[in-house]
Length: 393
Image (cartoon, rainbow, N blue to C red; front, top):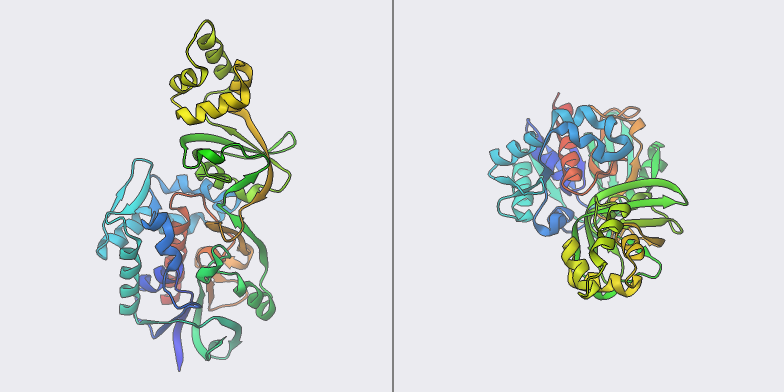
């Protein structure tokens, strides 16, 4: 049998793709594991942050240096397009105060199940326990070898993901296959959206304390490599939260991370406020600190223990708390992968590989990674639609 289309990977991108076809296919989805949509079920802590609100033009910088290269794909299959697709297929969504879009059910399983049903209606059968081990061009299209059997298809769509959370099946093994069999350029993968471990971390006892809008700067000596502001979380062993995770892919052992718990208040302003507040005041300093800047009392106490009663030292810790990085979270902790199939290999309007007609790549298998907030699922959807439309002609 020669299939019309084989999708490799039953994660978010693969399921979006199977569900997006406008013409029924004699189709197959090959999934490496025994489960379907595992990382999709994990997204948004199981609540499925599916995309973000606002103008699609504002999405481009959220993908870093490669954002401009996927502009046409995102503009065509934008966030409103995605929400309309979900609504048409029975999944209502809403916008949270922070701009993140979720299904009203707050249940990722609703999204996964709908995509599976829609893909089945479009003619796709999901076959589990079928990791692809080889890929070759044939006269009729493509031959895919798995540990179970060989398959022929007119077109193939790679939706295998990157390397993050490898136990879900996205372990990066497809990259070796693509380099060996097709000489496709792979940008070396590295963890993205991961926590950052630092030397002499002082907040172990404050695990769970968060800041709605912290500022984070990544430094190499005096050189600023990256900066971001947003949610900041103290865990029992490291710094996390969107502000930290969004700069993590640029981090390295020996670099420095500088945190501002009062962002956008500057050191100078914090010092002036503290100097005026502390002068002649007999209140406990941690109580005054917590009240002045609306900080958790336990955190204020920890800051005073480190800085004493000096306005300069207090202001320095609150706005320029600097640590040496000991490690960046591994792929087991990373929410996304930086690196993958080089975009120079791909027509980013259709997601077809330039040197290999009939072979497409979508989602995280490509060298595209977005910030937290629904941007990675948005690209999974947009690239899936681009590929399915190109296959249907």
